[in-house]
Image (cartoon, rainbow, N blue to C red):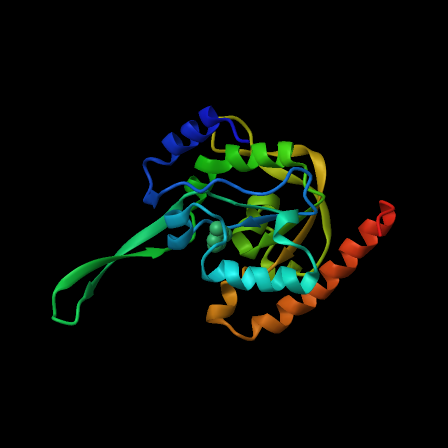
Amino acid sequence: MIPETLVDLCKKRMQPYACEGFVYGRGPMCPAIMIVGEAPGETEIHNGMPFSGHAGKVLDQFFHYVGVEREDIYFTSTVRSRPYKIVQKKSRDDELIEKKYNRAPTLKEQFAHAPILDYELEHVKPKQLVTLGNIGLQRLLGRNYTISEVHGRLIHSKVRKLKDLDSNEWTWSEHTYSIFPTYHPASIFYNRSLEKDIYKDLDHLKKILKHSEKRLGHN
Ligand code: URA
């Protein structure tokens, strides 16, 4: 769906940074929901499928709870490569080994892949955006928004897009989107108590989706 020339361009823009692999967004056109995550992790890079690792399994439970099938969701994220850091560790037999760990994408990395998400937003035409965590939220709405303050609220807004390919500057989309921020599913691995907040958010999301179905005359 995304032109290969755009993908090649973004891969080139990402070259200076410690990122590996490339995972395409996946899902139908005009989906009920478009998920905007952070970045793929090791599992996703390995098998080329967004949200197929640990966090993806938790995300599947969320949408099962909301009553939306994976087939009705378009999955993408702020950057499409895995940002990593290398950490030196001692192995059991006292040898120094290097391990790759996931990390959040930097702002420069977000700019490098911005044209992909911009393109997806324009062409996929999601009915409802759901951002996961601070990275997806701030990519679209800027740094004045924090997930702990706005999770579970419905926001209608234009979203940030890259001003032009030669600058690292944002401008605003023409279109106004319906955006629902919630925590990233991986957040509960570090803070179990967030799960309660997430399920409250999901209760609200369920109501929002029902209401918009009614408005559109579906059952
Ligand atoms: N987190 C994301 O944001 N995207 C993935 O594909 C996996 C985890």
